[in-house]
Image (cartoon, rainbow, N blue to C red):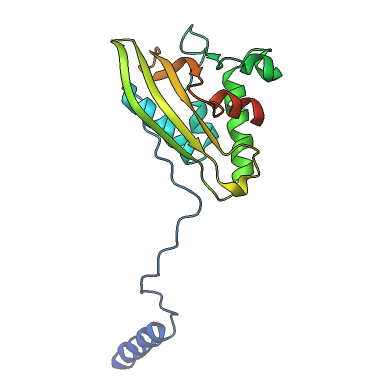
Length: 195
């Protein structure tokens, strides 16, 4: 019996010594890819945060979630480009849809590579706030890195978003009006050039 116990003890210590650190913790692996900051938009402020984060994080799928979906609201997304953009860019003539939004952002993302674009919203305010709709107004500045290869690197203007709460209690963009406010191109120009 003592021989069996001795043999078990010897086998046990042999396993511990030759186990290749079987019982030790390993170093955690670093996360691959970027982490999404998307949250369910139960308030207009969360929608605006998701909208801007999706652009900065280069996440075209989360960006698409910021707009109306005909499965959940009768409201159809509408983009109203800045003055002159409709005649300058044919993409706006056929009607600009949520898919158009996703496509333009995907095209911009592909040109950025590992670089990020900078989006700054200033003087932001809600000009209307009802239980199922709101209006968001802000000045914007978009800056693209020089390595993007884009012909224009800075876009400025004013954004006016009509926000609606769909039947999932999710806030989404129903209408987007873009306004040119100076000599630099507007967001509409970025969309038209990138589509």
